[in-house]
Length: 99
Image (cartoon, rainbow, N blue to C red; front, side, top):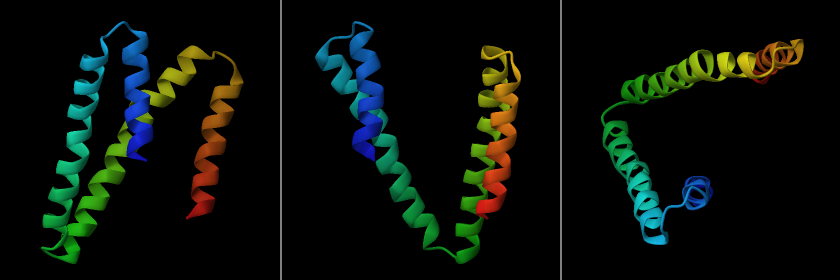
């Protein structure tokens, strides 16, 4: 999964005209946060099961915020028809069924 994330960052940077060394450095710096987050999660997770629940709740809230405040308005502004609204509603319904 990390390899795909690195490619997702490196390819647009390279296409944007950055040099190879700069692309490698920027991709490595962005990958450091994943390792630091894993270490932090391991330390917090060993404290108690309640902390795991709080951490997972925080992560879920952050994902909902990004979806509600960034992705949905962007899709509605890009595609003026009903298809984006229908896709958003179907996505929520399918997500509810998966629980």
